[in-house]
Image (cartoon, rainbow, N blue to C red; front, side, top):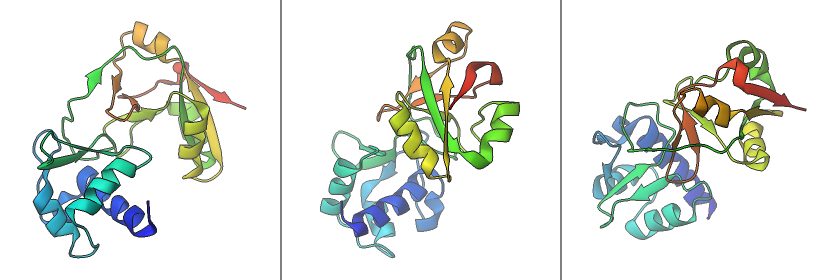
Length: 180
């Protein structure tokens, strides 16, 4: 993906996850936006056409976006701060999942557990490599091991997004362990 595509992808993420009003569009209850309206709105500040949008969706390493079947609608797969139902699939998680964060958040996490903050869900990954990448975005990375299997057996729901990110409403302290 080119630098322009990466910049445009970040802008699209802002629009589809947090601020569709930035370009004057609305999302339906499932987070879908009209592709033509998205392209038109994004094009005001970032060059975008259908070919570029398809490339961004296809090449995005985090698989952030999905088209509907006829590519007339697009949505972010997860990470929303606005209340939309992206039709997540409830699923039984693996026994252990991981969460990466920055060192500056450790004291709060150790006291309160993991909370979604401005998002709808806490994001968890299947491997420490992915969790480390996420943590690096927030400074020196710290990785937590999550007893997701035990959480699930204790009645806490988990969902899996289209791009393989595990989501849950919160992770109480008793289910987390900092990895050294």
